[in-house]
Image 1 (tube, rainbow, N blue to C red):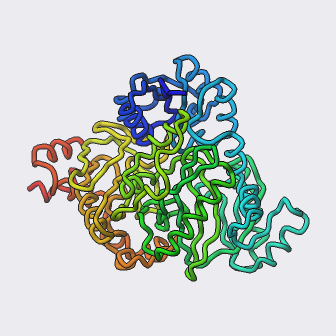
Image 2: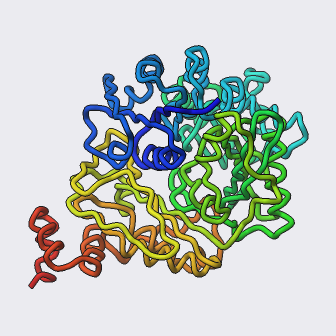
Image 3: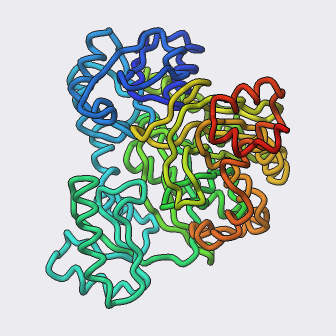
Length: 490
């Protein structure tokens, strides 16, 4: 089949990114919009913008019946879910399948299997792939606490249906185990409507390494190499890169082939990511599989030269994989920075405001995937990520230098962002040397935030990039920032 009209059931930068590829492929497009949203790049790119409603903006994007109805009403023969929202919702995929609309992604059965951490872990373990020592509550609820203790401390408690770090608890002492289990259960029920738990041994100073895979649903799977995702706050990534500085060539091939083997075992269709915990001794363990396109997919595109969304659309249309494994290179080094509206000096508190001035960096090896426009409004209705800054260099040192220069040239006035914080991470000696773990940001918190103020650094960045006339105009629209910069203007 061919795809003649694509509905992108998402918003922000990922919607814009999918729409651009669809346009290149000559596919007519539509995108969703809640009435509370101001214009975004996605709304300007799509051929059609369809209004959806709900008790909250997020609820509208999670309304399966409404979105399936939209797809049928506008004549879309395929739906791309982006990431987040309904991208890993088996019921949504099943509803589209029943309506005769192609889902750009795996089947509902695969999403259902791999979306349940306990079932996915058992599936992987039964097929001989590495998993961390653990205890699963469902195996015998009455002995769960006892079996958790037997795994040994430290322990990591996880909700079965979890994601984004929600509900995860690290336990180092037996005296707190039962309390933390109950806390994790309540959080699982609150966030996912599912209080089932499992525990696994907590790897000290682990790295988070994931592998991009692509399958055609006919047993053929290739990988697009690995990504290093250890720079995280609250279990959520903010900097990703490829290749990982931790891996030798032999380790790289081992972990990538393991991921491809897992995808083959489940007869995977479309783009997916197999995630691993990587220990200091070089061992690695299956963590989970994300059955969708990842936020950080652009770094993979930068080093391989493949458009992963084009690959998704190709497979959804029944055309199969476009390349054999031997044809997928890994050239140079790429780094992605997630630009978020948040204050890193205040425990990453989300920020709101009007975008009074936006000036994105440009230059060789620089890419910006953005979900905002000059004059836009940032609210707490959605995730605080505004855009992604991606760079490519001949090697890691050049990529870091380009990322720093681009971050310093990126101007977003009117709302506090994490740009200066990201620049501080890139400049940290341990990051430069590749000596990081998932606990890096917590371990180096003081060093990363002590010498700067978010408001002042945003203005100073603008002052170095913009003309006086544009900057003064912006400052006059922001009295509180204008006061901060009074001495500079004089």
